[in-house]
Length: 309
Image 1 (cartoon, one colour):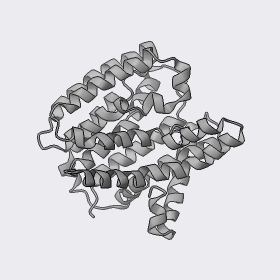
Image 2 (spheres, rainbow, N blue to C red):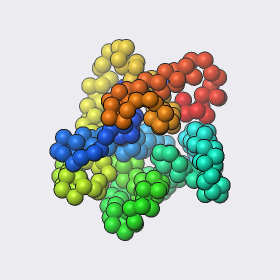
Image 3 (cartoon, rainbow, N blue to C red):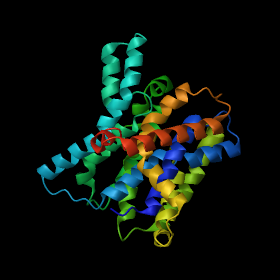
Image 4 (cartoon, rainbow, N blue to C red):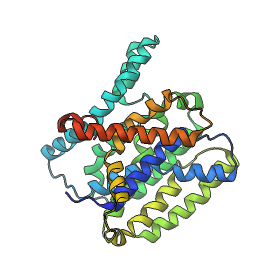
Protein backbone atom coordinates (compact mmCIF):
# COMPACT_ATOMS: atom_id res chain seq x y z
CA UNK A 1 0.00 0.00 0.00
CA UNK A 2 1.32 3.42 -0.99
CA UNK A 3 2.25 5.52 2.02
CA UNK A 4 1.43 9.19 2.44
CA UNK A 5 4.73 11.01 2.81
CA UNK A 6 3.23 13.92 4.73
CA UNK A 7 1.52 11.71 7.27
CA UNK A 8 4.76 9.78 7.73
CA UNK A 9 6.54 13.08 8.32
CA UNK A 10 3.94 14.12 10.89
CA UNK A 11 4.23 10.82 12.72
CA UNK A 12 8.01 11.14 12.68
CA UNK A 13 7.76 14.64 14.15
CA UNK A 14 5.44 13.31 16.83
CA UNK A 15 7.74 10.49 17.97
CA UNK A 16 10.77 12.81 18.02
CA UNK A 17 8.76 15.17 20.23
CA UNK A 18 7.78 12.29 22.53
CA UNK A 19 11.45 11.49 23.17
CA UNK A 20 12.26 15.19 23.56
CA UNK A 21 9.53 15.57 26.20
CA UNK A 22 11.09 12.78 28.24
CA UNK A 23 14.66 14.06 27.91
CA UNK A 24 14.32 17.86 27.84
CA UNK A 25 15.01 19.68 31.10
CA UNK A 26 11.92 21.76 32.00
CA UNK A 27 13.78 23.51 34.80
CA UNK A 28 12.72 27.13 34.32
CA UNK A 29 9.92 29.33 32.97
CA UNK A 30 12.01 31.47 30.65
CA UNK A 31 10.29 32.46 27.40
CA UNK A 32 12.50 30.23 25.15
CA UNK A 33 11.97 27.28 27.50
CA UNK A 34 8.21 27.81 27.57
CA UNK A 35 7.92 28.16 23.79
CA UNK A 36 10.05 25.07 23.17
CA UNK A 37 8.00 23.14 25.72
CA UNK A 38 4.84 24.18 23.90
CA UNK A 39 6.18 23.11 20.53
CA UNK A 40 7.24 19.61 21.61
CA UNK A 41 3.91 19.31 23.41
CA UNK A 42 2.35 18.41 20.06
CA UNK A 43 3.45 14.79 20.44
CA UNK A 44 0.44 12.96 21.90
CA UNK A 45 -2.16 15.34 20.39
CA UNK A 46 -0.61 14.80 16.97
CA UNK A 47 -0.60 11.01 17.34
CA UNK A 48 -4.26 11.11 18.36
CA UNK A 49 -5.20 13.40 15.48
CA UNK A 50 -3.34 11.22 12.99
CA UNK A 51 -5.25 8.20 14.28
CA UNK A 52 -8.53 10.05 13.84
CA UNK A 53 -7.52 11.26 10.39
CA UNK A 54 -6.50 7.81 9.14
CA UNK A 55 -9.41 5.92 10.68
CA UNK A 56 -12.12 8.25 9.39
CA UNK A 57 -12.42 6.33 6.11
CA UNK A 58 -13.41 3.18 7.99
CA UNK A 59 -17.15 2.68 8.36
CA UNK A 60 -18.67 0.38 10.99
CA UNK A 61 -22.26 -0.62 10.29
CA UNK A 62 -23.02 -3.50 12.65
CA UNK A 63 -21.94 -5.23 15.84
CA UNK A 64 -19.81 -7.81 14.04
CA UNK A 65 -17.79 -5.12 12.27
CA UNK A 66 -17.43 -3.23 15.55
CA UNK A 67 -16.20 -6.36 17.35
CA UNK A 68 -13.70 -7.09 14.57
CA UNK A 69 -12.52 -3.48 14.63
CA UNK A 70 -11.94 -3.48 18.40
CA UNK A 71 -10.15 -6.85 18.35
CA UNK A 72 -7.81 -5.63 15.59
CA UNK A 73 -6.97 -2.50 17.58
CA UNK A 74 -6.40 -4.49 20.75
CA UNK A 75 -3.91 -6.71 18.91
CA UNK A 76 -2.23 -3.71 17.29
CA UNK A 77 -1.68 -1.51 20.35
CA UNK A 78 -2.77 -3.22 23.58
CA UNK A 79 -0.83 -6.50 23.31
CA UNK A 80 2.47 -4.71 22.51
CA UNK A 81 1.87 -2.46 25.53
CA UNK A 82 1.49 -5.51 27.80
CA UNK A 83 4.66 -7.08 26.39
CA UNK A 84 6.76 -3.94 26.85
CA UNK A 85 5.23 -3.24 30.25
CA UNK A 86 6.14 -6.69 31.58
CA UNK A 87 9.79 -5.93 32.53
CA UNK A 88 8.77 -2.83 34.49
CA UNK A 89 5.92 -4.74 36.13
CA UNK A 90 8.36 -7.46 37.21
CA UNK A 91 10.79 -4.82 38.48
CA UNK A 92 8.10 -3.18 40.62
CA UNK A 93 7.18 -6.55 42.13
CA UNK A 94 10.84 -7.23 42.84
CA UNK A 95 11.00 -3.91 44.73
CA UNK A 96 8.16 -5.10 46.97
CA UNK A 97 5.26 -3.10 45.51
CA UNK A 98 1.77 -4.56 46.13
CA UNK A 99 1.03 -7.38 43.67
CA UNK A 100 -2.62 -6.46 43.04
CA UNK A 101 -1.95 -2.75 42.48
CA UNK A 102 0.96 -3.35 40.11
CA UNK A 103 -0.98 -6.01 38.20
CA UNK A 104 -3.92 -3.65 37.67
CA UNK A 105 -1.58 -0.81 36.61
CA UNK A 106 0.13 -3.14 34.14
CA UNK A 107 -3.16 -4.24 32.57
CA UNK A 108 -4.65 -0.75 32.30
CA UNK A 109 -1.47 0.92 31.03
CA UNK A 110 -0.70 2.99 34.11
CA UNK A 111 2.99 2.09 34.37
CA UNK A 112 5.86 3.95 32.74
CA UNK A 113 4.51 6.31 30.03
CA UNK A 114 2.04 3.92 28.38
CA UNK A 115 -1.09 5.97 29.15
CA UNK A 116 -1.41 6.77 25.44
CA UNK A 117 -2.49 3.19 24.71
CA UNK A 118 -5.60 3.15 26.95
CA UNK A 119 -6.34 6.69 25.75
CA UNK A 120 -6.35 5.77 22.07
CA UNK A 121 -8.29 2.58 22.83
CA UNK A 122 -11.01 4.69 24.45
CA UNK A 123 -11.15 6.79 21.28
CA UNK A 124 -11.46 3.64 19.18
CA UNK A 125 -14.28 2.36 21.38
CA UNK A 126 -16.40 5.50 20.90
CA UNK A 127 -15.43 6.01 17.25
CA UNK A 128 -18.67 4.59 15.76
CA UNK A 129 -20.68 6.94 17.98
CA UNK A 130 -18.82 10.11 17.02
CA UNK A 131 -17.96 9.51 13.36
CA UNK A 132 -21.11 10.99 11.87
CA UNK A 133 -21.81 13.59 14.55
CA UNK A 134 -21.69 17.16 13.23
CA UNK A 135 -21.12 18.66 16.65
CA UNK A 136 -18.85 16.06 18.29
CA UNK A 137 -15.68 18.09 17.80
CA UNK A 138 -17.15 20.99 19.78
CA UNK A 139 -18.55 18.72 22.48
CA UNK A 140 -15.14 17.01 22.76
CA UNK A 141 -13.35 20.37 23.06
CA UNK A 142 -15.74 21.47 25.81
CA UNK A 143 -15.17 18.17 27.65
CA UNK A 144 -11.43 18.70 27.24
CA UNK A 145 -11.47 22.17 28.80
CA UNK A 146 -13.72 21.05 31.66
CA UNK A 147 -11.48 18.06 32.33
CA UNK A 148 -8.41 20.33 32.21
CA UNK A 149 -9.95 22.48 34.93
CA UNK A 150 -10.76 19.39 37.01
CA UNK A 151 -7.27 17.88 36.85
CA UNK A 152 -5.53 21.22 37.43
CA UNK A 153 -7.68 22.53 40.28
CA UNK A 154 -9.78 19.71 41.75
CA UNK A 155 -7.43 16.72 41.96
CA UNK A 156 -4.45 16.86 44.37
CA UNK A 157 -1.14 17.16 42.54
CA UNK A 158 0.40 14.20 44.38
CA UNK A 159 -2.35 11.94 43.04
CA UNK A 160 -1.84 13.24 39.50
CA UNK A 161 1.91 12.71 39.73
CA UNK A 162 1.38 9.11 40.80
CA UNK A 163 -0.86 8.28 37.83
CA UNK A 164 -0.13 9.38 34.26
CA UNK A 165 -3.27 7.53 33.22
CA UNK A 166 -5.40 9.80 35.39
CA UNK A 167 -3.65 13.01 34.35
CA UNK A 168 -3.44 12.29 30.62
CA UNK A 169 -5.10 8.99 29.74
CA UNK A 170 -8.79 9.62 30.41
CA UNK A 171 -11.01 10.03 27.33
CA UNK A 172 -11.71 13.81 27.64
CA UNK A 173 -7.93 14.43 27.60
CA UNK A 174 -7.55 13.21 24.05
CA UNK A 175 -10.93 12.90 22.36
CA UNK A 176 -10.83 16.47 21.02
CA UNK A 177 -7.57 15.78 19.14
CA UNK A 178 -8.99 12.53 17.74
CA UNK A 179 -12.07 14.44 16.55
CA UNK A 180 -9.91 17.19 15.03
CA UNK A 181 -8.11 14.51 13.03
CA UNK A 182 -11.42 13.15 11.75
CA UNK A 183 -12.52 16.70 10.95
CA UNK A 184 -9.36 17.29 8.91
CA UNK A 185 -10.16 14.16 6.90
CA UNK A 186 -13.46 15.65 5.76
CA UNK A 187 -13.68 17.54 2.48
CA UNK A 188 -15.43 20.44 4.18
CA UNK A 189 -12.61 20.93 6.70
CA UNK A 190 -12.19 24.64 7.50
CA UNK A 191 -8.45 25.16 8.04
CA UNK A 192 -8.97 28.86 8.81
CA UNK A 193 -11.09 27.84 11.78
CA UNK A 194 -8.31 25.57 13.06
CA UNK A 195 -5.74 28.35 12.63
CA UNK A 196 -7.99 30.68 14.64
CA UNK A 197 -8.36 28.12 17.41
CA UNK A 198 -4.61 27.58 17.33
CA UNK A 199 -3.87 31.28 17.77
CA UNK A 200 -6.32 31.63 20.66
CA UNK A 201 -4.97 28.49 22.28
CA UNK A 202 -1.39 29.68 21.85
CA UNK A 203 -2.09 32.95 23.69
CA UNK A 204 -3.90 31.26 26.58
CA UNK A 205 -1.38 28.43 26.88
CA UNK A 206 1.57 30.83 26.85
CA UNK A 207 0.08 32.92 29.67
CA UNK A 208 -0.69 29.78 31.69
CA UNK A 209 2.82 28.41 31.31
CA UNK A 210 4.81 31.64 31.56
CA UNK A 211 2.80 33.50 34.20
CA UNK A 212 1.14 30.70 36.17
CA UNK A 213 3.63 27.88 35.61
CA UNK A 214 0.95 25.36 34.59
CA UNK A 215 0.20 23.55 31.33
CA UNK A 216 -3.51 24.23 31.09
CA UNK A 217 -4.33 23.07 27.59
CA UNK A 218 -1.62 20.42 27.26
CA UNK A 219 -0.31 21.04 23.76
CA UNK A 220 -3.50 22.35 22.15
CA UNK A 221 -1.82 25.28 20.48
CA UNK A 222 0.94 23.62 18.52
CA UNK A 223 -1.05 20.53 17.59
CA UNK A 224 -3.90 22.63 16.23
CA UNK A 225 -1.44 24.79 14.33
CA UNK A 226 0.75 22.15 12.74
CA UNK A 227 -2.07 19.86 11.57
CA UNK A 228 -3.90 22.31 9.28
CA UNK A 229 -0.58 23.72 8.11
CA UNK A 230 0.80 20.37 6.98
CA UNK A 231 -2.45 18.87 5.78
CA UNK A 232 -3.18 22.07 3.89
CA UNK A 233 0.05 21.46 1.92
CA UNK A 234 -0.69 17.84 1.07
CA UNK A 235 -0.85 18.58 -2.67
CA UNK A 236 2.76 19.75 -2.54
CA UNK A 237 3.90 16.68 -0.61
CA UNK A 238 2.86 14.26 -3.31
CA UNK A 239 5.20 16.02 -5.75
CA UNK A 240 8.29 15.40 -3.62
CA UNK A 241 10.75 12.97 -5.14
CA UNK A 242 11.49 9.91 -3.01
CA UNK A 243 14.89 10.46 -1.45
CA UNK A 244 16.94 8.79 1.25
CA UNK A 245 15.64 11.41 3.68
CA UNK A 246 12.03 10.62 2.82
CA UNK A 247 12.75 6.89 3.12
CA UNK A 248 14.23 7.48 6.56
CA UNK A 249 11.13 9.32 7.77
CA UNK A 250 8.95 6.58 6.31
CA UNK A 251 10.83 4.04 8.40
CA UNK A 252 10.79 6.29 11.46
CA UNK A 253 7.03 6.59 11.03
CA UNK A 254 6.63 2.81 10.76
CA UNK A 255 8.75 2.27 13.86
CA UNK A 256 7.19 5.11 15.88
CA UNK A 257 5.02 2.90 18.11
CA UNK A 258 7.92 0.56 18.85
CA UNK A 259 10.14 3.54 19.69
CA UNK A 260 7.41 4.92 21.95
CA UNK A 261 7.22 1.61 23.83
CA UNK A 262 10.98 1.12 24.14
CA UNK A 263 12.59 4.53 24.54
CA UNK A 264 11.79 5.13 28.21
CA UNK A 265 13.73 2.01 29.23
CA UNK A 266 16.73 3.50 27.43
CA UNK A 267 16.24 6.83 29.17
CA UNK A 268 16.23 5.08 32.55
CA UNK A 269 19.48 3.22 31.97
CA UNK A 270 21.54 5.28 29.50
CA UNK A 271 24.81 6.41 31.16
CA UNK A 272 24.38 9.98 29.92
CA UNK A 273 23.87 12.89 32.37
CA UNK A 274 20.39 14.46 32.37
CA UNK A 275 21.96 17.85 31.65
CA UNK A 276 23.04 16.55 28.26
CA UNK A 277 19.43 16.09 27.15
CA UNK A 278 20.23 16.64 23.46
CA UNK A 279 22.64 13.69 23.49
CA UNK A 280 20.20 11.56 25.51
CA UNK A 281 17.45 12.27 23.00
CA UNK A 282 19.65 11.46 20.01
CA UNK A 283 20.93 8.28 21.64
CA UNK A 284 17.42 7.06 22.54
CA UNK A 285 16.11 7.70 19.03
CA UNK A 286 19.13 6.13 17.35
CA UNK A 287 19.27 2.99 19.48
CA UNK A 288 15.49 2.47 19.31
CA UNK A 289 15.53 2.94 15.53
CA UNK A 290 18.38 0.48 15.01
CA UNK A 291 16.72 -2.17 17.21
CA UNK A 292 13.43 -1.69 15.34
CA UNK A 293 15.22 -2.00 12.00
CA UNK A 294 16.93 -5.24 13.05
CA UNK A 295 13.63 -6.71 14.24
CA UNK A 296 11.90 -5.58 11.06
CA UNK A 297 14.66 -7.06 8.91
CA UNK A 298 15.16 -10.46 10.49
CA UNK A 299 12.14 -11.52 12.57
CA UNK A 300 8.87 -13.10 11.32
CA UNK A 301 5.94 -10.82 10.51
CA UNK A 302 3.67 -12.11 13.30
CA UNK A 303 6.39 -11.58 15.88
CA UNK A 304 7.03 -8.01 14.64
CA UNK A 305 3.31 -7.23 14.76
CA UNK A 306 3.09 -7.94 18.49
CA UNK A 307 6.11 -5.72 19.12
CA UNK A 308 4.41 -2.74 17.53
CA UNK A 309 6.16 -2.84 14.13
